[in-house]
Image (cartoon, rainbow, N blue to C red; front, side):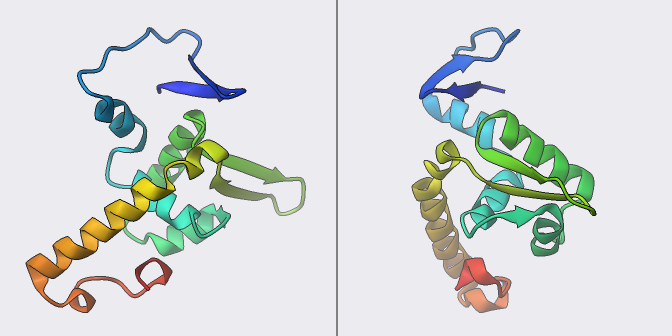
Length: 135
């Protein structure tokens, strides 16, 4: 992963060689690229979520993949994992302040996706699930 955020300064993780990128979007995609990370992040813009909530909102993702993606986002400082000391155990995920810096990017991706759906299919309601993110 790229780096951890320490007091406003991005530093390479311990044991990680400094990378070279051709363009900066490569660094962005290294952190939020893939099929599920942006979807997870969009759901987290609506507040804290438990793993079970995210799984219910994203029926196409496996539990293993969801946990893996959340761990990677946590390692990159994009999400915070909050563990509550109770029985049964309760774990919630939320965007970190660093993660919130992606909000405008996520909004633009959603807007573009909606326009693309309309271009390709005409009626977005025929292919876009009815959920809080699509209202």
